[in-house]
Amino acid sequence: MTKVGIIGAGQLGQMLGLAGRRMGLEFVFLDPSEDPPAAIVGPVLKYPFDSEEGLARLAEMTDIITYEFENVPVAAIDRISPSTTVYPPAEALRYAQDRLSEKSLFESLDIPVPAFRAVDSADDLMRAANAIGLPIVLKTRRLGYDGKGQFVVRREEEASAAVAALGGKDLIAEQWVPFEREVSAIGARNVSGEIAHYPLTENQHDNGILSVSRAPADGAHLETIARGYLASLLTRLDYVGVLALELFVTSDGLLANEFAPRVHNSGHWTIEGARTSQFENHLRAILDRPLGDTSMRGHAGMLNLIGEMPADRKELETPPWHLHDYGKAPRPGRKLGHATIVSATADDRDLALRRQTREPGP
Ligand SMILES: Nc1ncnc2c1ncn2[C@@H]1O[C@H](COP(=O)(O)OP(=O)(O)O)[C@@H](O)[C@H]1O
Ligand SMILES: [Mg+2]
Image (cartoon, rainbow, N blue to C red; front, side, top):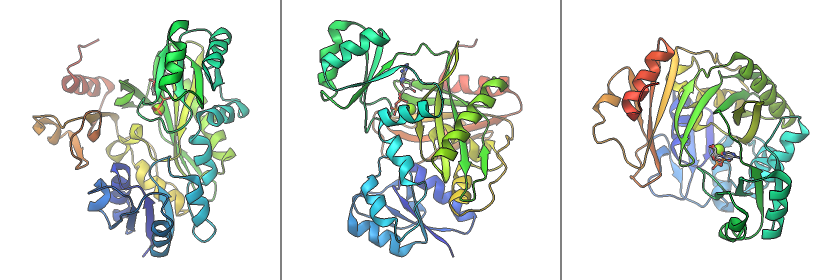
C-alpha cells in the first residue's frame, strides 16, 4: 500500500487524507501542534517542521512526501530530497516564500503584475511612492498570510511608521490595485507533465481572509488568459501537484498577485462541485497517475467559517449544503470550516450564499 507523508496536519492535510483514503492510500503527518485536524486521518509525528529527526522518521515511514503549506523551510526539503521524493519541487517553494522573487518570476514569464519595488528603508518607500504613486500596499517579503504583514500606505506621512511596523526591511511596495474582482486559477501537473485546469474561481476577501468563492467565474476570455499564465508557471517550475494562482481582474485585464504551491482554500468547492477534487488531483499528480476530470457538477459556492462556527449550523448541515468542520478550537480570524453548495444555476447559488452571509441582493 502506498504511504504518503504530509508536512503539516491542518485542514488541508485533513482533506488531502480524506480524498486519499478513498484511493486506498495511507497517510502519516508531521506537525508540532496539539490535536491537529488531520489526526482523524492518520498518525501525526509531533515535531517542528524543520526537525531533522522528525523529517527523517517521516521519510522512513512513507513512499513519497508532500506538504500543505508554503512556509516549510526549504533547507528541510533539501535535506530529505536526495533520498525521498518530495513534491511539489523545492524551487516552487523558494519562489512562493519571497514575494519579491515571486513577482520577478511572473515578470520573466510575461505574466503582468502590479508595479512593485523592493523596500529596505523608509527612503526606499518614498522612492517607490514617487515611481509608482500612492496608495501603495507595503508587505513583508516573507511569511505573510491571510492579509497579515501588510499595510496600505495612502499618504507620504505614513511611510516611516508603516516601514517600522513591518520590521524596517525585507519589504515589498506594490501599487494598490483598484481591482474589479479577484479570481484564482487552480491547476494540477503530474510527474509526466500532464496539466489539468479547474474552471476559474471568483474570490471575495474580508479583512484579508478569503470569505466566499464562486465557480465558474464570469468571463470565458479571462479564463483562457489565466490558463495560459498558469500553464507557463507550471511548466517553468517543472511543477508537480496542485498550484493556485491568485489574480486581480482590472479594467486593463489580469494582474498576478501571488501563487500557492499547494491545494488552496479557493479550491475547496471542488470536493462537491467538480468531478475530481483538487485534493484527489494533487495526489494523482504526485503519484504520476493520469489526472481526473476537472469539469463542474453545477454552479459552486463556498463559504468560509471563520472565528466561530455559526450558532445555528442546522441549515449548513442540511442538503443542498455540505458542511466541513475541521474540528479546530474557535479563535478570532481562524478558519474553522467551510460550507459548499452546488446549484443548477448561478442565480440559485448566489441566492443561497446571500441568505447565509445576509448580504443584500443585487
Ligand atoms: N497590490 C494590491 N492592491 C490591492 N489589494 C491588494 C494588493 N495586494 C493584496 N491585496 C488584497 O489583500 C489580500 C491579501 O493579499 P495577498 O498578497 O494575497 O497576501 P496573503 O499572502 O496574505 O494572501 C488580497 O487578496 C487582496 O484582496
Ligand atoms: Mg493571497
